[in-house]
Length: 358
Image (cartoon, rainbow, N blue to C red):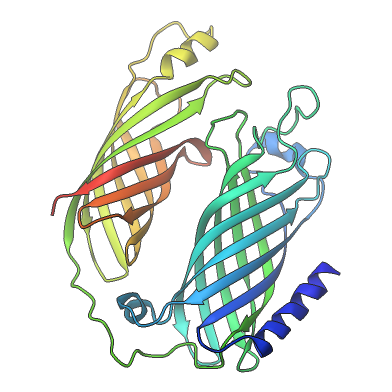
């Protein structure tokens, strides 16, 4: 009933909304499974995932970003999912802003790719007595990452049908343990109602020039906290100083490489909890990393992989990863946020500030 009513809403909005701006509303149904990325997650697989999203979107026109991406868009996504396990997980709710870019643009058919970061709420998190089998979520409140790729088919001037693949991740960054996280791959079918019948992909009459690619040196200071012992409530700090050199290969993408220095205060706590460990670990780790970036005006979305060449701890193996975003605050100052992990295991969230030298 809810799905039918929201699809009707798309049609009503598309025919009666004002035409002054390139706004749209999308309703999307999704079907999939909860991914058992760790053996301890398998016990939570009770049924299929049924999800629903409503997206409110605005196309970006008359800017340098439009010239590079050909009518990209930004929006806000409202997310609901039934993961098929009402007793141990319950429903999942989420909200996140996103960026939508296009890689194939024809008047009747186009291909979208979307990246979003926001917040999610898991109805039934871990409880040591009543819900001890839910090792995926130690808290109800989580950060949320939404990725999607869609093929769109224009049915009328204002109605678009799309289908694609989506991937949703929820984690609290080990602020509350356990935190194996939820990974939800789905296939989707959606309808988009546009508030205007003008062509979606339209060149600017007065295009803004885009600057030439440049090589850039940054330094960042980042901070994060995490819990080590389940239920203790004690948070331990991690400090990170990074130097990163960008190779801006194009107006859309960049590659970078850099050095990391970590100071982690929780290694002593690991030694205290695990009585089989007889030595103390140096809190210092050094690493080298490489990253790929998608540049979207003042926003830089990136994924990176690093290697510890100095690591006394060694329990997380040799490689580490980040998925995050940098946001330009001024000509030289940048804010940075990312999920710092070891493969599929989130270690903690990092937030920080960066400075652009060249």
